[in-house]
Image (cartoon, rainbow, N blue to C red):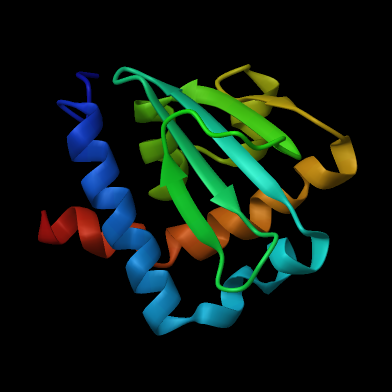
Amino acid sequence: MSQIYASAAEFEALFTQMFDRIDTDDPDSMDELVEQAMVIRFRLKAPDVELWIDGRTKPVQTSFGAQRLDPTLTAELTANAMHELLLKTLPLGKAILFRKVKVKGSQSKAMKLEGLLHTMQAVYPDLVDEK
């Protein structure tokens, strides 16, 4: 499979649009992250991008690049694996089992990734189709 995103800028533009749409269409979908005051860092490769989701306040804040935050969880994966997760062609359990996603942080908090992914999966396929 070739690289889904040609550049970090392309990835960031699509994901900014996705989180804007989530915030507009279903702002309560991130409440679980806010209740847990979670900060999630996704470290992606090919292209190299750091995506931060800061659930310490509502609305949830997203940003890219190095941040001065202490993440609750860090998930490391390729941008292609993120794409597959969000299109539902790669189940999270399988991705973790086969080390396509490596999660650092408490296991109980890691389970919160599934809810976040469901929220993202509700929006992402339409954005990809529009692209």
